[in-house]
Structures are given as structure tokens and as C-alpha cells.
Length: 102
Image (cartoon, rainbow, N blue to C red; front, top):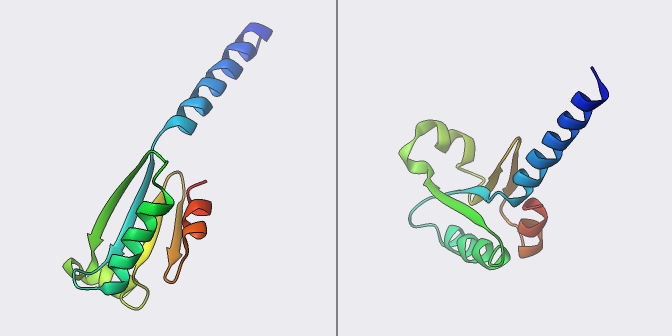
């Protein structure tokens, strides 16, 4: 591969990296409808990420047997969705959410 091709690939990699950094963060908060801890977690997540560009989806685990089996004793659970999935089980603090967002 010639020097010019290497420089082009390097520039493209830098552009893609910059684009990914500017992209919004995607999170899922797993819980149930009448879960007081889930309500507290939602407020905490919104406060922790108030200055961030993020998308938060709220998923009620009672709609799926698979989700109930996976999360029933762990809710609320916050998951960051990116190249990898990172998860916080309750209890978590504002600082934990901010670290997860990095």
C-alpha cells in the first residue's frame, strides 16, 4: 500500500472516530411500571446525563418472559448500548452513570 493510500486511510479513521465521539449515547433502563426504585433510577439517570446528548429508552420487563428471567431480581438496570453493552445494576449513583457514559 502506498504512502498516499495510508494517509487516506488514516484520515478516514480520524473522521470516523470524531463522528463516533459526537454521536449521542444510547441507554436502556429496564424496570417495571410500578417500581419505586425504577422511578428513582430514572430521575437519577436524567440528572446524571442532563448535559449530555443521549437517548434513553425505558423497557418494562413484564412484557417479556425472557426479560423477567434476566432482570427480575436486578431492576432497575441501566444498559449503555454501543459497540459493547455495559450494564449497571441497582443500586447505582449519579457518578456511576457518568462513568458508564464515557
